[in-house]
Length: 638
Image (tube, one colour):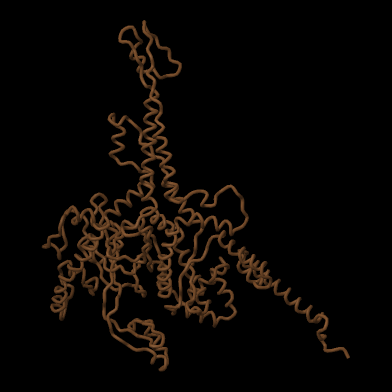
């Protein structure tokens, strides 16, 4: 049950002290105390969500942690390493030739070279100026958050463990109106509704971001609860006032999941969840759009409408799914309030690798066995070679060479060994076992075949090519086998785009947008938003209208991706250029100039020159007149 309690009152309730003083304080304090069971129920529910997900996904978490170990060159079990180093294991080395890391780096490199930027398109043929401006604003947000590197880290998580997460937020640290932020989150510190099945996460009832915090960090974030955040007491088994008489379960289990004894930290459970609440809805009967009639933005819009526009809305009170956020540390809840975002989505966006019926997994999962095969085979060969270097001697007990001399120097080049009567004979080593080398090669070949990544498919052969289209075809050929990784991430990027649009509309003002577009037009005039801004600079009224529509439009945008890579853009330009050659006059020269990667000032000069040439051609036609048989410019000859 959601708690609608002020933070200060919530702190007093969990402290066991009265929150109110003065006239009517007793009634208010009694009413607050009656909510103690609701507070305890909510804490228990949130902690149970964490425990349920942790148990249900334990296999995935263990496998994912092992996948990170494989990438980071920790590919041997500790027991195997100890056995190989012991006399019983033959004092063999635990060799690691990491063939998994290059596969991950290859996928990551393909993504980096073919980065695509989020692009906003108008829905149902709306004005493209609005969508172009919103595209520019999203690009600004992504640049401010160093998003290409945040998203690359998220993609590496997907390739390695099968899950990646990005969190959107609004920060008020540097701007009173707020800045849109996004950040990659550690996949192992996220807990989610395990009953959800949709890759987009739209059917998740709850999701948690649960970073570890020190006591000082927690007190800085929640000063109202500073005297109740006592990590030392929690680690020793002490519980807050509200739960002091409740059996809290296995202490060891709690310490493992909610408290860290070694680093003296507590897990901060930021619990985002959906509930059904009755709200007043405004339904536009002509369009079918539904708005929250209690939002300030809608109330302001309604006040600015005339009577006819207001009559298009019908007001209905009904239950609707809304998002809330609660935060729990140990057995202390520090907030439970409505989501601060205007959009009705969970701000933690899931990215999925490969998934069929079980838990998602990444590229590394199915490369582990071939990697183990290669490591163990090479270690066997190296152990054999080490033992063969000094295979031993046959030495007669009496009349032979000095045994100590043979043991110490028997394998040293150029050593002179003296003997009495019988010459010692060197024991011939066993020939190198080629089967282990064959197994090692089999492991390497299996990794190439299973990963579907190789030089030929990537188009990195020796044949030289000039066509950007050919380069793109080769690269796409190399991606075909792993296209599901890239395609699945498009789904997450779409959700990211929609949340950024909503957060931009929530935090940006007209003047701020115009200032951002002006700065972008100077720094990078090729950006879509900058181009639109430059084209409307002369008409300030139109510019303000476009910006105003950007801030108010809710359902008029479609988010997709467009190529950011120079190679792909050049391939598209060459395709357009070929079409212009094959169909003369079908594609205007100005369109070709706009599709090129020339600097904006060069484009403007070229288009200006083209326009002058067209004017000169038009003047020539007027002076020369039509061909034979046509009338003269000044009429027929008398």
